[in-house]
View 1: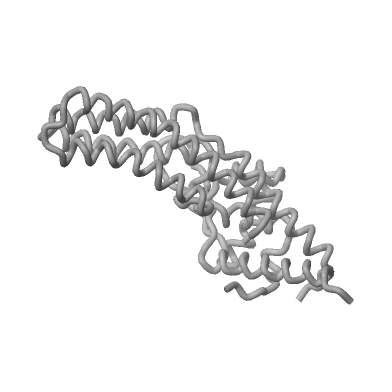
View 2 (view 1 turned 90 degrees about the vertical axis):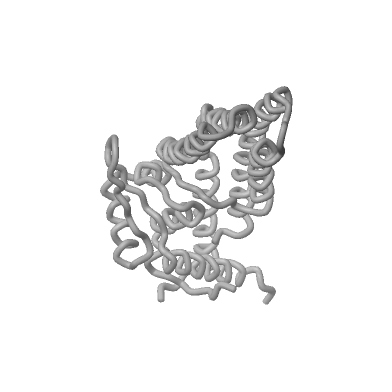
Length: 154
Length: 100
């Protein structure tokens, strides 16, 4: 085994830290990403709440295909693919993001007779909350990555 | 808990940084790694080959529209080796802090 000093070990740990910091700086989500996700879910809320039937099935299909395309486009843009939060805070932010998308969809899908005005309000809320909570998740993810770099490099 | 274990393959500076990045993500594109490290294609290719030969990294070139990109990801043994190596570095770094 190669023998290294404590100072060498510290320098190696510092280089790991620097790589993680650089990675966190690189993680910039394209401006269109969260609005596109929000529009996909908002159309689903509108179609489920106002139309139903076969169009609702097609709407869900559009969400499935569209989100798959968006994930690939994100990876192509950043050169990085991520599927898990980087820590507790980003995990909570991701849970809030998912809830903000799911609750309006579940409301219009399973509650009978939701008023048109309420459906429109839910669609607008899901669009806004997806953008706001998506950006919050990004910021929290980067902070978790930087924090983890300093505290637990592995 | 991770057992500290020095790993010669991981320890080389460029490979250590590649592993540090890949341990934080599912996969990273070749160009992203090259820009992060600030090295030439040939240098990164050489280090990735060492990691691939050790079974620590897998390379993927998904076919589809547009230019072919190479993606790298850590294998399970690669993640274990990196975690063990970092634990060993932390152990070594802390030895100088001990009194006496």
